[in-house]
View 1 (cartoon, rainbow, N blue to C red):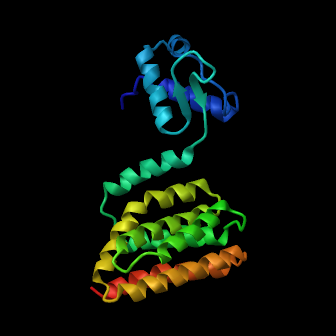
View 2: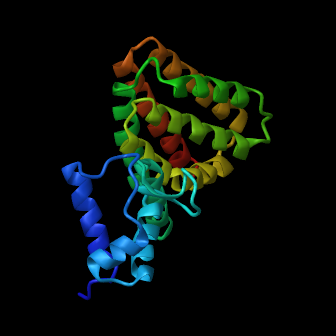
View 3: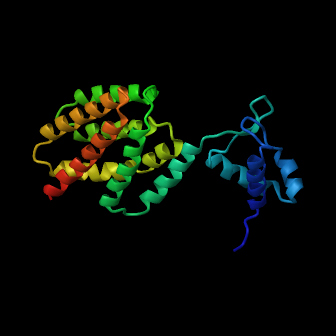
Amino acid sequence: MKVKSHQPVLAWIEQQLSRGELQIGQRLPSERTLAEQFDLSRASVREAITVLDAMGVVRSAVGSGPGAGTVIIAQPGSALGSALRFHVASSHLPVADIVQTRLLFETWACEHSRTDSPVLAEAELLLEEMASLAAEQGEEFLALDIRFHLALAESAGNVVVGAMMLSLRESIRNYTSEIVTRLPDWVRTSARLHDEHSQILALLRRGERAAAAGLVAEHIEGFYREGLREK
């Protein structure tokens, strides 16, 4: 396999980060310096920086002020989530597999949720918004529902779990929207879902993580089974 011209720069930066010789907040050497160091064109170095920028490893800014240059940052969640979303979008994943993956992530997150996590307050506001929606606003309810579940996943403070849940967002929206179109009584179902949301959040607020994990599993599986019955 042909090695891309910018690969040596990426390998060197990864090595420097692993050794602690490059740290968050530090600037990379200039494009000219890196080009001379690796005997590459500045275009190849620039390509390496672009890749790192997209990965959330660096932030680049042009100019000559204090904010100029390429700075090491740490935003793995957004980069990982973006990459996974594209892979998920390019595949037609079985709904049962998506549900099982949600169960893995969300039950784990509930078991490790932090009672002081600020996203739990955000989840409370989302519940209030859901309660205010009319029956015909099913899609709006589902959008808030997904944001609520993302907040639960993020409450454990694990960046990777949060990013992977975010990557499933569109897949979750697709299958839940399809279920809603088949339900005979959305008003009753949405009221039940909202009540279960409230119970899950209350358990997490009290630090009853195991109970919350069990209820979130019943909540996710129950809605999926309801959709299967209406096929």
